[in-house]
Image (cartoon, rainbow, N blue to C red; front, top):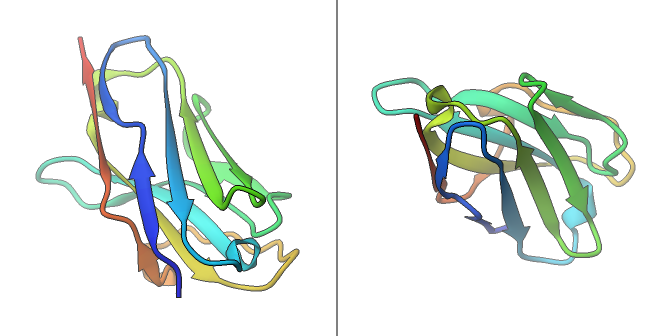
Length: 125
């Protein structure tokens, strides 16, 4: 089992950048595929980015967003650049147990077993 804690959200002006972090508990972080999702008020939670357990495979729906991970620090990151007001949402990280050096990435909410509590990102115009 893994516990996830997001941080790094806040208020930023349009065009600015933020880096979100998600710290995971436990000693087997390198066996989890990780993802970032976001949920705006009144909308469904949507996929943002994913990374394989080794970090060798990544996917992002936004060219302005980059996902990365540091397995030595049990942390996954989401670097967000050129932020827009429509990026305003609660951002969640998620984890799914796979294997070490897996190339698996997940895109669907129901493929993830563990979720953090979320961090608010607000982009002002």
